[in-house]
Length: 68
Image: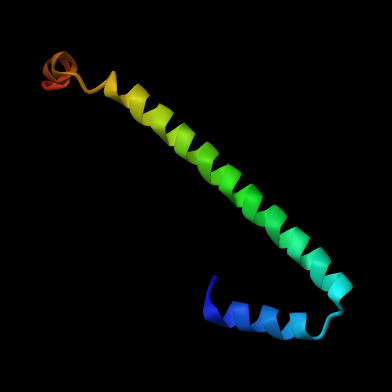
């Protein structure tokens, strides 16, 4: 997150009660968890794609398609 965004959030947090602060913290933790899960899913997907692509990059394939 860029510094300007952090500053704006911090300024807004200073204006809120502890009750709302706790709710915001809960929501921020939820978003961080969601982002971590999505990052892991993306990494798994990309690993699967890379694994699948290796089947197409064998020496025999390169020889077969060289003249096309």
